[in-house]
Length: 412
Image (tube, rainbow, N blue to C red; front, side, top):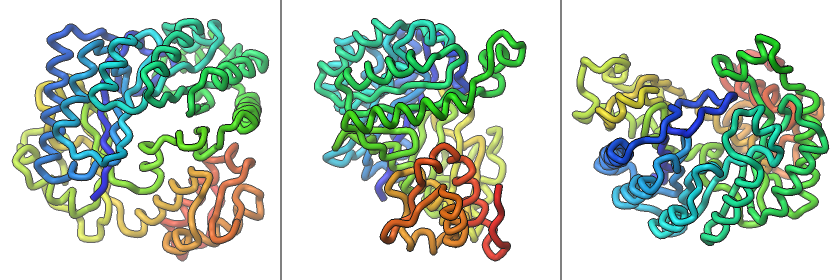
């Protein structure tokens, strides 16, 4: 079984105002950083002992900001290599931010097998960066890009549009500077206001204006046009790449490849039979562990796929890196097929007629096509340019239709 492996590093220098990921604004002391690497190794060894890491297509070390660990960032990557059997062409990515990118450490990471860096740039406008609560500047982002590209590894960057106060000219300049930087992969996201974040509180108190969805959509379209004209190809709802630079780890999520998550709040998805073997192991058999719930009762007979999430508690992970998940979701065969169709539509190549038929969503796709949201080309269904802007409606409609077969199509 081929899998992807994700490691969540829950540390960052400053928690950005818009971020709702599990992370702690702390620069770990060396002892804590080393202990975190030990915990990652324990988690990897657990899955390796179950035979789940015998064929790893990709590793993604995300966060938080992994490079907040400084030179200790190298240890978790090294321990993963020693516990997992990587495919010869495996993609190994480490997330970093401009303020924590050290050229010497980046070179060490490449030496232990990192093939790709993902840099959180977000904007080349210092005013926009301050609004987002970022602790880097446009000039430091450019220096970090130069340092990362100098390692010879592939480099991706993230950009955010629709930020209050962000002008069209500012956004256009950011996209053009991103293109000219020399990276092969650029992801573009509209700003979303997540509940419980400082940004949401500022919007609620009217300290800042809420994001303009129409302007964000316009910026997404203009960025897409600029990127395509510059030799990038849109291959996923939010991602553009030059030929051969597509991100293979994230593509695995959209094509149903099983994945393992190590670290606090990390998610995993496994076939039911593999999960069934995992819950029988001693590490998950402590009845006193909170959240164990029905996982020890066995897998329901109708289940085909299991999703689970680790406790969002860094201290728990550091104390007991191998333990039962906090949340478990059991998907039937019908739900798994609907999920494959819904997630597959996130890719510009779309899904085949066979996938649509297996999921029971051909009728809803025909209806969505009449609205100009998807199109049928050859033997494939693909989301249109208009459909990307209304992606939530497309994906939710496909999921509903696939999981409510025989009940008729329902517009969400």
